[in-house]
Image (tube, rainbow over all chains, first blue to last red; front, side, top):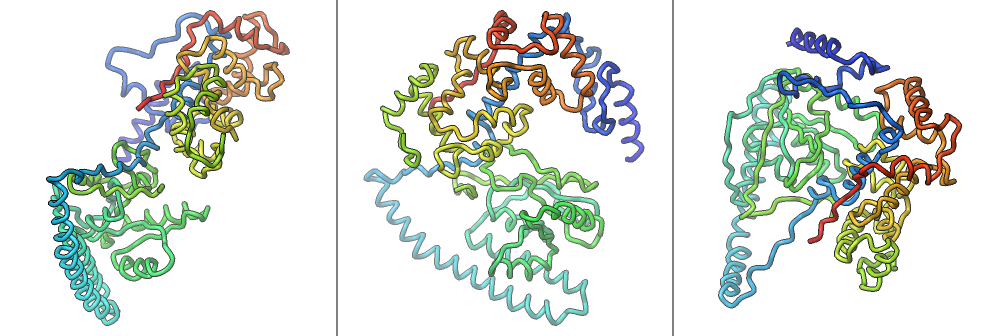
Length: 300
Length: 175
């Protein structure tokens, strides 16, 4: 793999044009190799005629792009949540809807609460002993804690009768791999966690959420960051790199979009997940819009 | 026009339309108002520089900082007037005036060699050296019979850019 990188770099310096030599050689590595994108046989056209003052002063294309971004942009469109349209307004559907309310709130909802409560009871009664009594036997303890976290997540998904179809190979515990997924809502993580105990990178929240984070999530291996701290970036990047190197750490899951979006467009990825020097395995989560619009609009 | 209300009255729409010299239709002004409210997250009645920079496609534009100086603190009426140069109904004169205003950062009606060099630097960055930039600009200016010390005014701009097919249009989507 390192050998391939070297020959690619050589290619770049040989074909870059001599007329405009960059004043900083490090930039050459960032520029894409143009030859990869042109169809074979063609070359970059030289500009016709001489450069005139008119060409230099005409900044209209750049200004048009800026104005276009001001008027509309796909990033903001990603945060648009669709308001639900009322459908129960006529005489046939309204009684049916009332019947539905009875079933949903008085039958299904208690059942779900019971399922969730049972899940938490089982989880806590197993997790707390395992956590404290097996302090000495780290490997066994971690294995059990991992299974328990997967269990409670399955209970959570079952409590809202979630049906999850998995396609493709399951994640395995190997070093030098990182998983990236799209982010629609807070339950993305739980849905993935019930299949495999991933380690995540998360912002530390105060209060009881923080308590939950530091005890339960710590057992699957979590990396904390603080958005407000400036130096935090490098520390976190180092922690991430250390995490993926070790074979017995849980596979790392990162949401490169950085925030919850409505998945109508792709939002520009943050580069943190891709600079760790390991294989990137993409995971796509698709919610069936007929049943639920799971998008959690963090901007509201 | 009230700063805190998010309701646009017919009177407001007509006032904005006359302020921008009828370059936008009434429906376009309503769409622009929705966009203005979308960008103005703090509801201050104007879009701050930071709120503009929240739009990634705007933030990566090389001229974003120059445009921010013109955009900072504009209320809705001035926001529409700013964008009027990009309407398909705007005249070539209006577009050239806008470009002139982008170059003329101190607003004294004259564009100097350094102003043009600054814009060129924003666009080219590290890809050519400062020396090469100055050489190119001096050479091209002299060919157009200006010198390094010439002060370019709006009428010069009209002469230079007037004959070109300047394409500077943005579409405002109307629901």
